[in-house]
Amino acid sequence: VTSLADVLQVGDVIYTELTDQPGQVLLSQLPGVEGALVSMQPKTGAILALVGGFDFHRSKFNRVTQARRQPGSNFKPFIYSAALENGDTAATIYNDAPVVFHDSALEGEWRPENYSGRFYGPTRLREALVKSRNLVSIRVLRGLGLRKSLDYVARFGFDIAKLPADLSLALGSGSVTPLQLVNGYSVFANQGYLTTPYFIDRIEDAFGETIFTAPDVILCDQVCEDEAAVAESGPSSEEVLKVSLAEENEAEVEAVADSGDMPSQSESDENPEEEQGARFEKVEKGLIRAPAVIDERNAYIMANILREVITRGTGRKALVLNRKDIAGKTGTTNDQHDAWFSGFNSEVATSVWVGYDELEPLGAKETGGQAALPMWIDYMKVALDDMPEDTFTQPARMVTVRIDKKTGELTNGRNPESMFEIFTVERAPSAMLTSTSSDDKRKKPSQQGSGGFGKRAPEPQEQLF
Image (cartoon, rainbow, N blue to C red):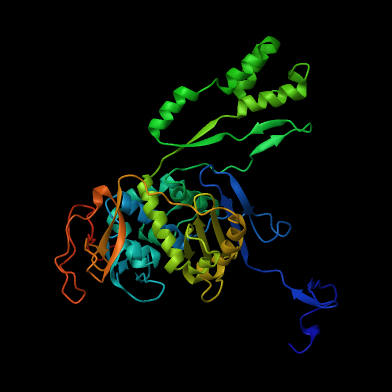
């Protein structure tokens, strides 16, 4: 370009931005890339913030609720949670080694790799998720089985009809929305409960009267639900309507109740505004019980691992927030078509997506940690401002013990390769290593039980994919 005439013509609009210096402006450019952010309260499902794209006037497509994109590694925590549910521990050993799959539907072979292109050998489950190891994730999924894994991730609110029934599921090849992802991550944040996202907290009429209030949410297991149903159940909305309007026109009210429509203002008594506000409040105010979908100890372990993603994994940029109570996971799809970051503490869960509406690469090294995480940081810096840090009380029936970093087996403080790990009491290690020196030859990991500590997953053989 040697002249402005090479790129501009009469009628073109040039966007500029004022600077602090009088008379100086900066050229602005409308981005081709799009983004989305959604944030919610994990314990209630209340939506705190939603950004469906760069500019609503340019595109009314809501990418939070309507865009189904591949989540990449942002989906891995749900597979690892399934592994914990089915006998693994954070210390279970998987082999991070090459694997090849053949499929007659493909022209060649599928040779999945880690993002780094390297292989790391025997790897603990915790380390594999913190470092986002693709080959371990595939082996975890294969060990679980596809049917069991799909049934498990459905507990987090995902539509399994949109997920692949093959091993690429472990790498996030399904189709999900940012809203589904943040709702799934909220299960880890609230100790195992699936809430329903909602957008409206209350509605007031022209007179300032509250005519609708969102139901209260109770995080409750099945026993608590049964007790609450007996202790707190009140008349149904149909019964409330019948009682309040029976003298006026019971037959008409029955028809309204059956159809689910609220009575109009003309159907109320002498004080229509007051009556309608009270009626809506009576009918709409209630309780929603969010079911427990995973064990609270599973959720605690997953949140603990995901905090390490930030302290020493792919989410290290979030350390700038200077908080110890945040956890999350990056996600990047093939050729950097999609970049993700989903993260949380117990009060705020947020998912961010960056990409083009058409499948175009974002560019070299535009990963979730590079493209999406900075947006998450900017938002959470404000959302968590003045919010005290979580204490992360460990649930009952859990223990913290010292294990060997390389084998996952129980050891003691004399072992320089030792570290602390958390377990449920049922799956805690129960035998010491005979060697405590890093130079000594360690015995092979134990094969105790289906989910014993230090368990080595079986080596996958070549299979159709």
